[in-house]
Image (cartoon, rainbow, N blue to C red; front, side, top):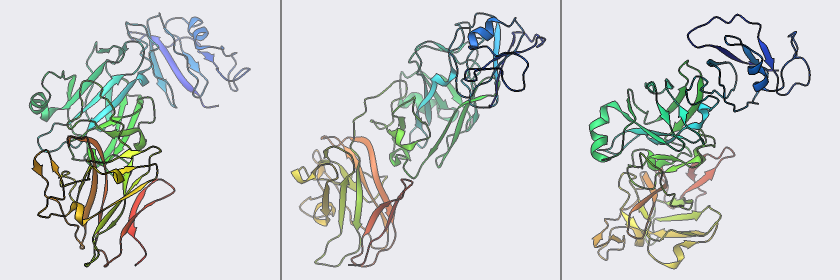
Length: 399
């Protein structure tokens, strides 16, 4: 059995002088290699050891949440373990795993500020004094830092302090970190004051991660804070441009509609065309969404407000150059009274992207698309999903 050592010692550095007691949550009898009968619960183990003693927990992922009233420090060594704040004046046993990263503005648009947001997802106050980033950034929470249930803490890149205050007036800043979030993705790690990791998050700017957060002015927002933080399906683009530091936001519930195929090289009378597919399990209304060839300029052409762009589950809709190409009749659509410029797809290669928007033309945080290379005349690029869930856009069979 894998052993997790929880060592409890007197605050102030008293020596560990006593024979350790053992707690075994899963083994019915004495633990192999020890001469002592294990306790059944952690509470019994703590009750059976004096201040300065040692408790060894002989279990894998079984842990109790308890309140320790003795002046003890909890130290974990090795293996997956719920790390508590045993020295907290609020009473310990509150797991630091309740502290979660819920928003990342890792690649802000020009004029934007980089930040990240953490929240106490637990039901009681959490003492995060001394909690530190040990991968990705440099920041340590100062002494006496306590987050109440549901409390947010926004950390801002030190070089963006003035810019953040200007962009988000009234939003309190919980601290400034040095270093920066890598625009290409990286691993962030939160650890206890003693350097024991309890949260690791690896995000990316490609693959299944929401592309709208990669320089598009939107942040990454987690869907389920208690879910896997390393699963790109557990993240979405923020509802609002600029994100929502300092509080939660309402999920607009954007359906998952993808660019399924693009015909980018044609000669008249054929026309370049884009195929959309609704891969969500419900009806998707994409009327008023935007199509563009440049992900940094989303509002180039607008999907018409016609019934064929209300897609049933797994439904398909098509757009051709009469919808998205520049023309005197204003076919690329408009936002209010402002006509859109439209675009033409290059047979030599560029990109094609779909952006969600509301009826007023305000972006709502969803994007899908891809870059493509040179194409043969009449041969489209199609979306292929591998068994690992990765998307590829490859030339289809020649027509």
